[in-house]
Length: 356
Image (cartoon, rainbow, N blue to C red; front, side, top):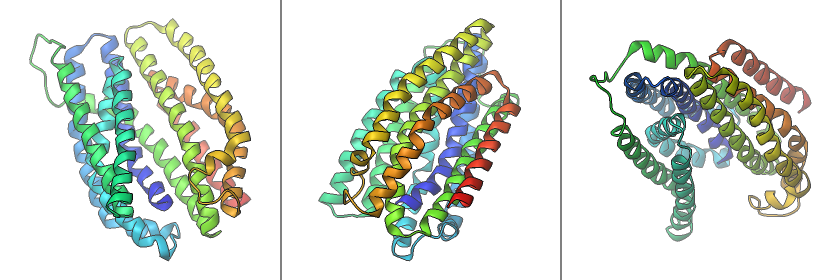
């Protein structure tokens, strides 16, 4: 599944971009109390996300074989990787609309509701995984269908709650369901965010192709370590998104001094989170990697532990960049944001090729 996972990140990058684009603009409108435009921005995002999702689904069904070949997927795992991706493509609308919904919740200052959905979905996914794989012996298809089912449920619930929340926001005039003007504003934020995540995903695919050349043991160790690493990066990225919404809301309300306060508070928060995680990963990486590996020794474990020991000290730098990214996105400084993102990708890929 490691090879499939890296490819799914490309599609998640687009969904994440829609999340950021919508949440930043909605945050600004919410801070400025422009509720009519706020509703129109949400409807516009839902329509545009649906069109983009349809295009990506078509591309996924047509080109996933080629992507798997491009990253040197071993022959003994190719069929399973392809099967997982085919099922995943069918769940793409759920991924898109769930991301948009969580972005809207965050923009309105409600981070509790999407957290509850995520926690319930994750726990249910684990339970259904066990049922489909261990109970029904469905193999990789069971994992994929479990993900499909849980994403569908969480997406449906999130959208229901969004529209219920919208019914409490009253407007005096009729709300338009689509606006090219607001779509342009959303795209200005969404496209750089999509490119950022796509750059990271493409970089990961290039790195995965390098890792695949070292054999299945190294692949397994790398895959385990990346899953652990992504838990940290995802958490820090979520905090960065919160900083984006905080910045956008205060920009809309013209409370600029609070943006500086938010930056300092954000740095303190992410560093407090990074300190214990970096220590745990550096000194206890072997025990964590064992969760995803069959043996506590061997080249797979050695690879995973070495990866975690190298990346753990750099979480402080990564977290600082993610907080700064949040400020740049929320304040609309997308040029500087893109320069930082492109520099990140260039260094990641070039150093992976050189040092491998």
